[in-house]
Image (cartoon, rainbow, N blue to C red; front, side, top):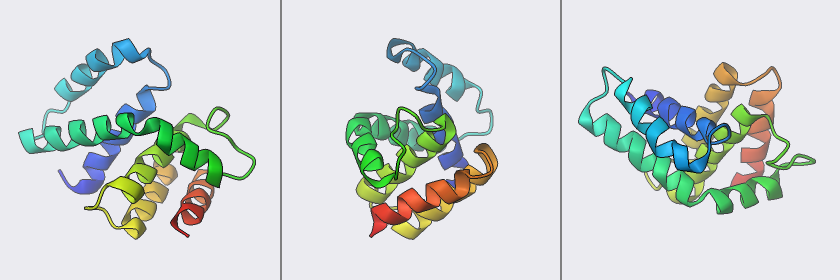
Amino acid sequence: MIRSELREHVFKMVFQIEFNEPADMPEHFELYMDSLERATDQDRTYIETKYKAVLEKISEIDALIDEKSKDWKTKRMNKADLAILRLAVYEMKWDEDVPVGVAINEAVELAKRFSGESGPAFVNGVLARLAE
């Protein structure tokens, strides 16, 4: 899989944490991974590693999002936008393999596919403020 496909799978798992109990997430993760028929072992490792890394930093990530989002706190955000932002903020701040510009671009592309009409502009705005 290419990086953007892998990123989409990580996004989908991060999105699920808003709708499932934390104790249930390992089982949901395993079921999701089992459904990825064309994923290689390397792909699966990448998805799992990045997903777990986002979860480990989620409190710090949410604090950064709250700080940079005007008039919107994570508790009130569109859940797709929140998951996209969480992944992008992780990549921007802690993933040295992903340049900041790429993280922002990929997040906007995910928002175009999975968010509402205003999602891409919202995601871009929050991440642009974070990148300053």
